[in-house]
Length: 331
Ligand code: FAD
Image 1 (cartoon, rainbow, N blue to C red):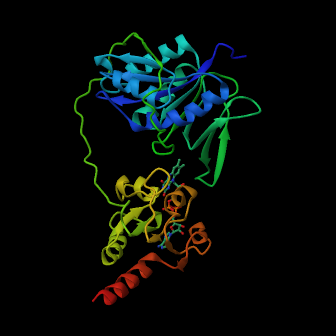
Image 2 (cartoon, rainbow, N blue to C red):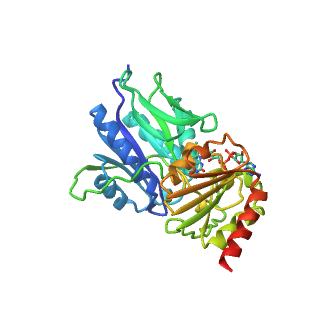
Image 3 (cartoon, rainbow, N blue to C red):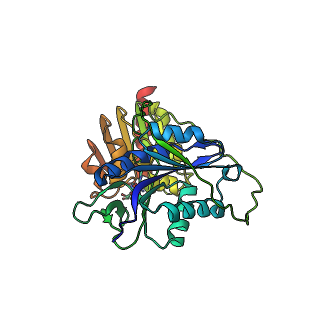
């Protein structure tokens, strides 16, 4: 039915000439899909001064690169990048396209899939080939992460999906690999968007990787101000402050503190999870800790199944007691 559609594409996002890591990460599942289908893995590099990224894409596993290199592609713009991707898709008719779920990727993916009238599975955590149908099997958490759904796109092509940064490991580069770089040119549409100002957020550096003790707070903490309870315990123990994604998404603490599948993977001597339910994506990032203590008011919270010690109680009552007791020991 889709005999004209071939090859697996990975969109390699760049900004001001520099590639985002997620593009390289996606070359790993892309390579697996291409090998299983017996087709080529094609990296799509769109940017300004990005020839080096095209070469790197080959070292990291691409067989071919479609390169759009022009000053207009220096900074992401929906119209310009959407037109470029749609033009390339119409010309080359890929079988599947993997896009990083960055802010720009989340804009580009749906824009392109709507224009070419195909499906897109967002925020995938696993990607494979469905042995029975030959479609790409896009797996993503559903119902708040309580079950994993595998989604197929059997009726339209290309099959598209986005994947959060950090889900897949960057493959090992092999500088001896060779591949073809095809320079393309697409119509640049009239720009309807004027970029007035760019503000760069200064990322906070948090040394979670090396901390021996981490005290983490989740949704149960309730507010940014209440993170003082977490911080007080972490300080007295000489540890670092971690967080679940819910706390980060609520804007209570920065992403630099996030532990889990899309945050940091940590393995401290002691991990104290406070007001964290224990979703699989959180556990994926901390289950390697030597000792885990969980404080949660719900005795059935899944976090207790990985905890070595569980305290069923209100963190606002438990944490001040723990902090005071550790303070006494220290004095
Ligand atoms: P909730 O699930 O809302 O749990 C809050 C807990 O606090 C409850 O168990 C409640 O009983 C308890 N509580 C409430 N009040 C109190 C109190 N006063 N005292 C004590 N306990 C209390 N999550 C991550 O953490 N890290 C990730 O990297 C991550 N990556 C993800 C990637 C994907 C693709 C997806 C789909 C999800 C990801 N998530 C991640 C989200 C994850 O599925 C959960 O939604 C999230 O971990 C829930 O955070 P939480 O446990 O803080 O909140």
